[in-house]
Length: 309
Ligand SMILES: [Zn+2]
Image 1 (tube, protein in one colour):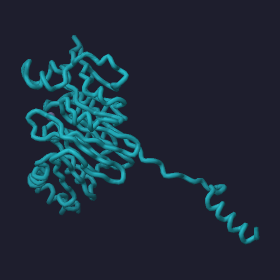
Image 2 (cartoon, protein in one colour):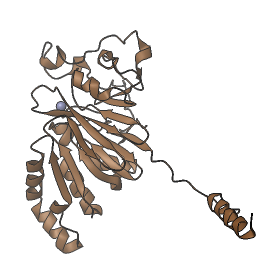
Image 3 (cartoon, helix red, strand yellow):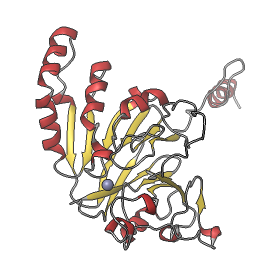
Image 4 (cartoon, rainbow, N blue to C red):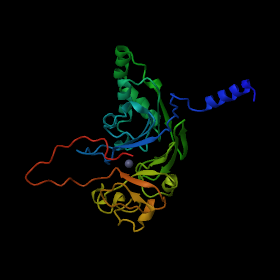
């Protein structure tokens, strides 16, 4: 080998190997975090639990699912308030959407200058338009007084009227399924296929083949569980009987599913068809807290979540 060739090969080798005194870093793989921002269900405020809401954060980008009242503060407590990029609404029950507009408004009032995409069943676009109309005075004043960019052009509402593909970016692929929710015209469950795992959020639904199909092969399933004795309505009402999960005995076949947290027994049968899925019951309707006789318990502290993954 000629000296010139030797230098050339050496140069190639040096170029392909870590050089002494210089550390070579590979780009870290993007990992997902799931934070349950609220796990209480129903319209009544709770002392110790927040309204439904979850966030999946991939890298530094946040995907919020449902916006129960207080979602912005829950996000602040969790340290993810400024990560918001997308919002997904499962259905238009007030415990799931009351702060959809407020979250966007508070993000904008803080520092939002980049687009937000909101996804959900109709009439999502009309709701956003009416929300901006209701808050026109605040929007106008902050633009003039604080130099903020006009908010409505930053918000893109996307109405979903069927199951299937929702959106895809360089970190997450989102699909959805139409799920049964009595009296609600259209309710959705969402699946987030992240770089490291798949997470499914059921919203409120009873047993559904479409829900099971959406969750099949996923790593985490967050779903509603209902404590039937405290469900709205009289014994025998729709919420307490057919179609809704009931507090049946825990499945004897524990090999096919695993529960991270369950305050009450719930029916895991619907999910036993999804082997490997870790199910997290959320939005549990709690019975009244037992009173301690003679002394008061500690004051309720706000919490953003007891559940992290
Ligand atoms: Zn609902």
